[in-house]
Length: 250
Image (cartoon, rainbow, N blue to C red; front, side):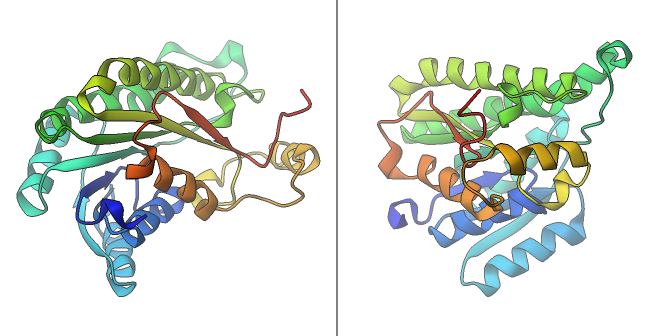
């Protein structure tokens, strides 16, 4: 979808796993990528990979749950690349398992920092540029756990459900400004950031998915690519579940 060529896209948490695949796909589409992560080495690896494939990318190390860091991040991207008109909210942190009786409020806050606080901070910083351009694409990466919560992941599932609500509220409010807001909800895909998913979840996935194979990060990135494109200009407030049909029979 080359209609987005030259626009700047920030993909948070794009120095590894699913975020790296999304960054690579958007660069292939012609977007100028701001690659974000917490490790300079990992960020540079993705930048180098995108450049080697003919894309344009710069690396930016920042904690997107910290207000000052977000302000500095957006200012730096704006100075080096230009205004951010495509924002993919993918950053995540540890997702520990615990039974409900052992989950503390602090555990919920830790998840909400990534999936609600971080998006709010970023949109507050980026929205003026999208308003000025009369164009914007905001894509959340949530998870199938928002509607298919596994046992022991209540804090993560709750924060992801809150992220879906945030997406829909923003879509309603920002649509008249030419800014679309959508969400891609992956099922389990074998990427590095999901290495802590317990074996029973992996097994349940294999048994219940109508498509008899695992998904790939690139297939999730394809969905993000659509929402980031001009072709999706009349699509907002939508949530696309990319999980091979898991849950159809429930």
